[in-house]
Amino acid sequence: MAESTVGLIAGNYSKFAVKSKDSNPAIHWLITSSGKLEKEVLVSSLTAAPTDTNAVYKLSTVADLSKIADWVNRGSALENIRIKLTSDITIPSDYVSIGSCTNTVENGNYMDSSNKPFKGIFDGNNKTITFESSSSALFGYAESAEISNIKTKGTFTANTSKSGT
Image 1 (cartoon, rainbow, N blue to C red):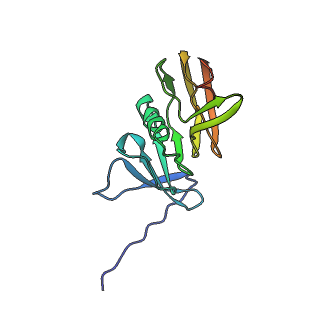
Image 2: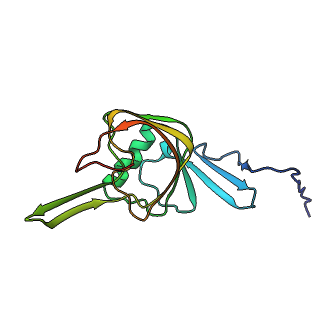
Image 3: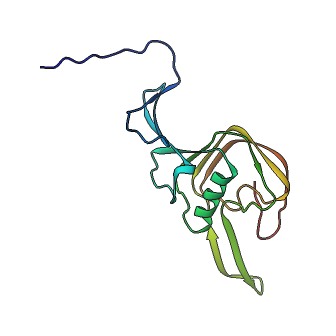
């Protein structure tokens, strides 16, 4: 029978990484201080909208943010998907908001609507999002979403088709 060695970790760690030698560098497994195993995935590594509600999807660039916006604006609400901002970002003037809501009104009545809401969990991680003048809002339309811990600077344009924070 082969013997195995078990190592103990002493100290107060908020989390540490668990890696195997053949692991994907875009995916990290972490054990949190509460003992929970948590999967972190880089948004930059994805080619399609995420679906694993047990993972945390980390974004750090405007390109990552634009991927999120594209997925939501094409109809993937990212419901219950956890997204975490990992660095400060400056939003350019041509940025397209995450989520959209458009309504057709005739004689004061809504006739048609094409809503594409963000329904995920966005943790700004106390990072700063700076808006260049005339940028769109970060979120154009969110529904049953959790958006927290975001610091903002600058201004954005709000009109009937693009508004929000």
